[in-house]
Length: 527
Image 1: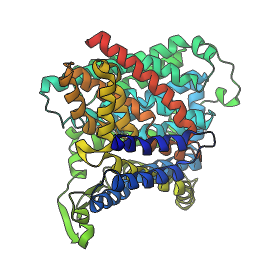
Image 2 (image 1 turned 45 degrees about the horizontal axis):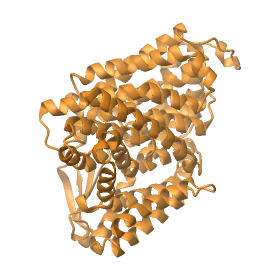
Image 3 (image 1 turned 180 degrees about the vertical axis):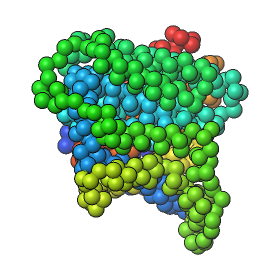
């Protein structure tokens, strides 16, 4: 009982610190909560201090993956600002439609859908957010909107990684895995309509949503219909192809004004036109990023394996710290941390920091005469100071709460929640997946962590295992909107300072709606 209460305590502390009236910024709340968890691990759980310290070092190293991704996204965004590319994109989007709903659905829904299918890693909101802010939408509302909508495609994000790799810890036949993918697509697709409307309500007035409801529903449909259809054939490309088809179709719908109410423009930019050449040049940071992501992510193209080559070029012993190795593809690894099984690895050429963000940003600066590398880099470094501290604390927290496998604090919480709900578990199982994403910042890691527990619960309660695993996968997706890593990332890119707690309280509402919808849909559709 003491261990269970102690497992909950650091999590409750973190949520309290970040959501109380005078909320504490993440760069203070996360390290403080990690410190509390450190004490709990040593005193209450009585973990081996050497293992605890190895987990801490591993967390500090793993944190540099999201740190470098965020830095790359900020660098690209600042480049788009400095070169004037963002201003041209704003003018072009206004020429397609100056209706705010149309702009939100094109950039925040369909474009994010496509980016998630190619990359994951929190990339979609980091790219879409600045574009929407450039269109004049309030930054805090944009952050909430983008986080909420970076959920539906996540089960098949990064070319299906959360499904085919995330569920690899559970023994499933090809037919069962395909069934999990199809059920996940249906559940996410059903939730999509509800969650898009919830997200829009945080940015625009409800009367505007009602006036443009036909366009909204059509935009959701043109992404979700191909997404579900492709899921019946593949669990790698539903989000990538669904987002691509949906983006083109949503732009066409907006251009033709189908389902859109007339909107009185408040800006002179609405009457300006952008030539095809200007548009191609201005959108290069976006389409160049997407293209590079697709080329480096789709295994069939043969580049992805090259970027992930782990054969070390050289190895160096760092004594008790472990053995450092660097491969020809710049995959840096540290194994045997403090003489334990803990290890760390970072693929510099695969993780979307240098490629595509860094490369595309430098090419953009070369393409334009405006903007200098020095100025953009200086702005990026200034904007990254607090997020670095927050993410170091976050990943230490994650590693400590998940250490111990089936005896970890997070597994203890999962089992406790399953016991409390009993035979009604199917209504709540998605929330366990969301809990995993909240901690780890990854639907893939959530699935790796909880799929085994979910499978055991399904068998123990005689529930359909593919349905429960689909709900786990969907939960990992919806948890994307509340995970600390993503919130810190978007707040950092949009320079929102200490607004993370404010954002979390609102995305949590959307996550509850999502969970209730898929819980009910799972029971009705799949028994």
